[in-house]
Image 1: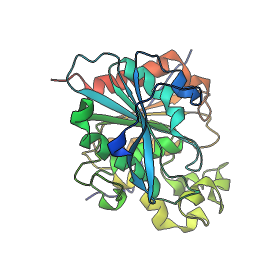
Image 2 (image 1 turned 90 degrees about the vertical axis):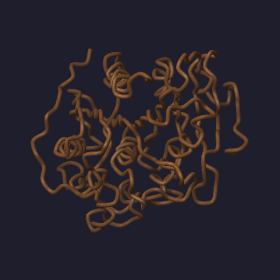
Image 3 (image 1 turned 45 degrees about the vertical axis):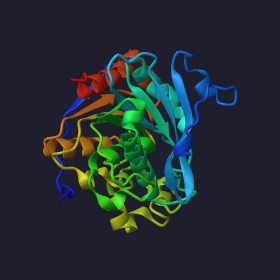
Image 4 (image 1 turned 180 degrees about the horizontal axis):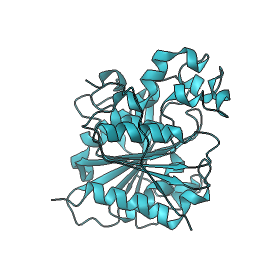
Amino acid sequence: MKFLASSLLTATVILCEVPAIAQQVFRKPTATSPQLAKVPPSIEVRSDVVFGKGGGRDLKMHVLLPSSNEASKAPVYVWIHGGGWRSGNKESGIQKVLPLVHAGFIGVTLEYRLTGEAAFPAQIHDCKCAIRFLRAHAEDWGIDPDRIAVGGASAGGHLAALVGTSSGVDALEGEGGWPEQSSRVQAVVDLYGPTDFARFVTTEGYEHHNADGSPESRLLGGGVVSENAEGIRRVNPITYVDPQDPPFLILHGSDDPVVPLNQSQALHEALQRNGVSSSLHVLPGALHGGPEFGTKPIQAMQRDFLVETLGEQE
């Protein structure tokens, strides 16, 4: 049974020196979608594909297929957008998955219900539904169902980490569709995602996140964060860590003013305690995102991790 580890060890880190489902829509990029318009014409774009239901409405994803794929089945990289669980959209993930599409992956960027529409666990329900949908359509799209990776930044990093650690937790699956499929993933890229809200809102300089109306409060359904112990436990990816979890690549800025570094450190330590492969890279001087995360070495680090972790088809 999955459980919450109770003790924290000193983190081992690497300091980086930084110089409708049945009616799938097949569209070319249009002027009304600037991000899709940047996709090279050699890459097939399947936009606004309905992957399930959330709160009674359709949920959609964009799918980018590699221009050439000699293997019969390709790995998939799913990007979950950030925005404090209250803003953002799937368009912002196009440039995040493109480097992997060029490497032979199928790229996916999805929407999920924001906190203005529904509180937790709606967000993780939607993300897991998308993974199940991809497995259900593996034969149709040439997907290798045993090579699905997920990534995200900030709130998206939190959801990606939660997808990675909570496989088999029925309460987080939801009823969006494809219940016969697994939501398990084989690799996770987590960029500066929150994890342990109790530690987050008591860290010096971040106490304002404890207030009613903060992004974390809204995710939990409102109220003072520290007074909702059960909500904090449920949203924390560390709660569900066990030895069967997939490899993680975690990146965080040393000077992040939005999400304290201890959030990534705590997740990394919990994964290591359970024997899960985890690499935490702290970017010196980096804030909450920013140019340090867009450098070629950091982009290559993420691409190489996914290619090496998922490997070549046998």
